[in-house]
Length: 114
Length: 115
Image 1 (tube, chains in turn cyan, brown):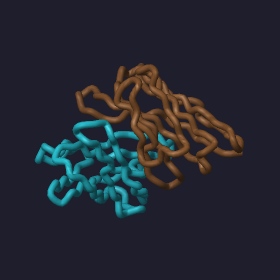
Image 2 (cartoon, each protein chain N blue to C red):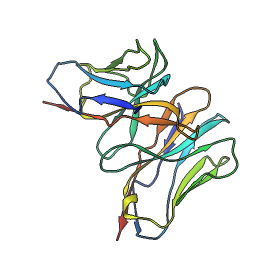
Image 3 (cartoon, chains in turn purple, blue):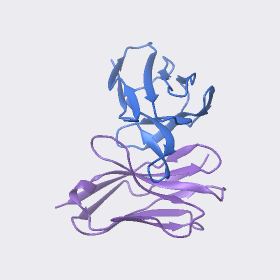
């Protein structure tokens, strides 16, 4: 099975600044999906952004953008103009193209300092 | 409104007891999942089902069982063989959002504790 690695258990950022969360994955597949999910203290999972592996253009959603490096199997999340509401656990996830097997990383806890 | 409903929100299990966590969806999704989350950790896949009457083991299936007799329902049973069941359990289904992007839709979770 594919594995997803988030090497930063905790990160912190000053309000209004930019932070980048790292994610790497291991796969032999050429087509797949990648996701970043946010889990606030309520524990509800919220999709932040998604990327199809066949797309070369990096996905962007408002203040959130990714740096997708397919050859390096890297999928980092950049949060610009950080807000207090961005404080949460962030999970990177991988899903195979051909089936519905979806795997998550261990997560990064993001703290936003006022 | 369509969505995923997990019940109960909190569940307590006695030693040697089997307990069943409910997950229902009215999103007409084929694929459904069960994940386990331990404090401060990520989501680990227990089982997933791509279609009715079909399911596959994830990374930590031992001590758990599932059924998928109906498209809408994917209950998870935590058996007495699971020696450390205390965790937060999340159910999800896979489908398309309003922008036709595929994603997981999550329930609000069940916190299981051992008495």
